[in-house]
Image 1 (spheres, rainbow, N blue to C red):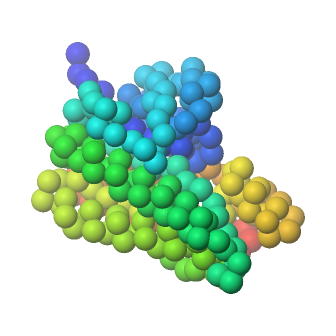
Image 2: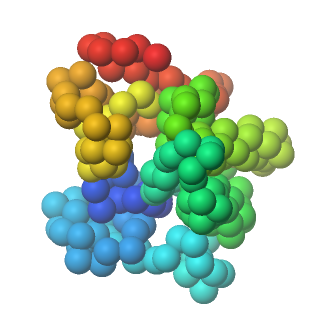
Length: 230
């Protein structure tokens, strides 16, 4: 029996992470990473070959990844949104943004490097348009996304010889719970028709993962066709 490829998706209980897991599940055995075990079990119940991998990503250890000796795809989709004017944003917002959006990504990847090397695997970082251009009042979030872009760039160069591919995906506004929270902060209407669906972002991830061996999609920008294209 041919062993199926293995994938791990963080933030898999909802939004883009859940959408990515759904598209990977027909061809991969998927570990669903996140903190909410009940929600992860709910997602897993509808996907063949998927199972929960409950973990606190900001405190991940070698024990958490024990037994993962080969990993074909690692998708970092978990993240937090902390925005505010530089004059008003407290240090804790900057620290939490970096802790979740950068440090947790870097540490989990570091722990899984041997498994990724064994499979000549693929790391996908779900970034944001904010990782390409910082807007006013988005300082903490944008800084963390610029930083994780630098992380992905460094990893790509360092692990090229090991056959590991690294892709950064930069979506525009996506119809998710995080987007609803952002619009509440901004005080604007929630215009779902002007946003990307989580599945559209997931399909961009799959385009990178499914690229032939001679192709490496290093960065993908995805913007909604309606509304602001930036």
